Amino acid sequence: MRSLAVSLCALIAVFIAPTQASGQEGTVRTAFFESLGAVDIYCHAQNESSLLDTVVYDGLLREEGYELRPALATSWKRIDPMTLQFSLRRGVKFHNGGTFDADDIVHIVNWLIDERTKIPNKTRFDWIRGVEKVAEDTVRINLKKQFALDLLLIATRLPIYDAEVHQRLQEKCDYGRLAQVGTGPYKVTSFDVNEGIRVTANNRNSAWRRAGNIQNFHVRPIPDLQTQAAEFKVGNLDFLRLPYYMVPSFKGEKGVDISSAETPEFAYMWVDAAGRSGNKALKNEQVRRAIFLAIDRGEIGRQYFSGTPRALKRMCFEWQFACPTEGTSPAYDPATARSLLAKAGYANGFDLVIYANTSEKHLAEAIGGYLREIGIRPSIQVLAQSVFRLTRRKGVFQFVVDQGTFGGLSHVCYGLRTLVTVHTAGYWGDDDLKALVGEGCETHDPAKQRALFREAYDRINDQALGMTLSSAPATFVSRELKLNPSSVDYGVRLEDIDRK
Image 1: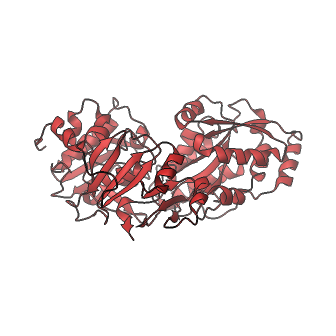
Image 2: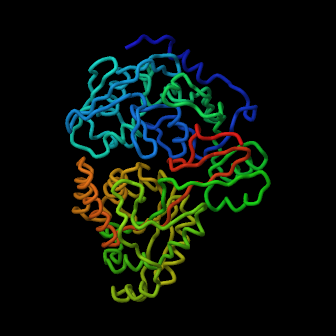
Image 3: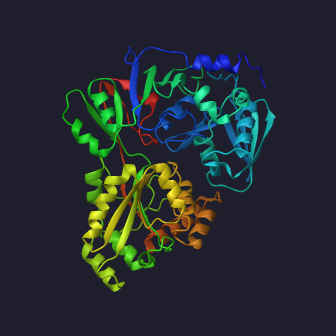
């Protein structure tokens, strides 16, 4: 382990020093509506912050075009089903000038798997037994059990931090606020919860990944979307990601470009089939099927999403590995829905509470309208995301309308495992479904994965447990920029943005 060239206090001072004013030549400005907790995927994971996390830090590998490519590791191999070995790139420098080596990998992995480390999404690493340094440029990661996504999660969910800086912090989760030291193509030059985050191009490690043509970005925290739109209209922001309902106000506006891309995000709904919430009607498969037949998913997509939304056959995208492409999903058929309710003994309908995040309020209201047409009497509970997650654990959810990426990976295992074991835990009551997903996530046999996950998705459809409403393309407005949207989590990458 190399010696630290400067004290932590001096390092922090460098990172929070004032930089050029917003709007100055060369700086592209945007805004987040989430609070700026930190540039840190481990302690402060947020969908918006992925725009910065992915350019400030590098992993051992990277995913490009659904293929794994070298990053901080130049090569890798599976020594046996439980051991992965990585040969590390030499001469790599952190943003503070420190040299990257095997010690940085060993430190961050050991910290993540330490039982004393309390971070969100720690289950992402529950398959790792340990890590060992073989040489300065070689490490091995040892597994507790076979895991289909081991290399993919290493590529997308294991950014490498400067071990010496991280070790010096009393609170390790302060790393993303006080000293965002990475090796990526952009480095943080200023971090302030009120003023925002500034990053500038860093091509010190350009051998495998370069910054784009835009050298400087400034991300401001603006929690109110209407204020964001107003700031864009008066020229104080250069691009924005907007929800579908705000896009029409920008159509036809001179000098404003609207662009979109299909991301791993989709809107979906699921039902408390186990009756955990106490609503007995939902335990009846005919009732659940009636609910799904009552909803015009095509119209939902057209009315509530921009770009080119589409109804998906399963709760996954066709481009994700092991997402079944065959089969059909329920078509809009309110007459059959009413008939199924009558056969189930609910010809006069029943009361139903729809739960949704604040961002899905409009969707929940639309779903409620469709359900009223077949005699169901819905009420809607809209909750902030943090409250939504806490309430879900209490077992009171009857019917849920939500939107998300389920990890946004190019393989169905992570998203399906999250859906079955976290989001719907206790609400579906199907142990066989859990077993199928668990087995599929623990084999490296592609054919076996496809068969197991197809059976799992078939069970979800056959029992009418959940269904997608629509894909949810990311839509942006911009001026004088080519954003080049893509299928990454946020919908655009900083290094892909260019001037017109």
